[in-house]
Image (cartoon, rainbow, N blue to C red; front, side):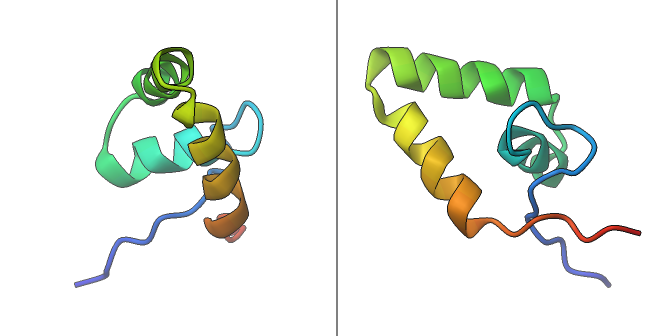
Length: 64
């Protein structure tokens, strides 16, 4: 059984691929993940910081 790994998406990306990678990992639509980051950014201000940190620590998806 292969373990799932979290990567920044190379295909489903708008900025750095963080939301696309999170969506692929959890099997969600990337639009909902992006919307979640926007809501967190507007409501608490932490969404933008979380996105920046995630883009720094989540590795880029290896190319095929």
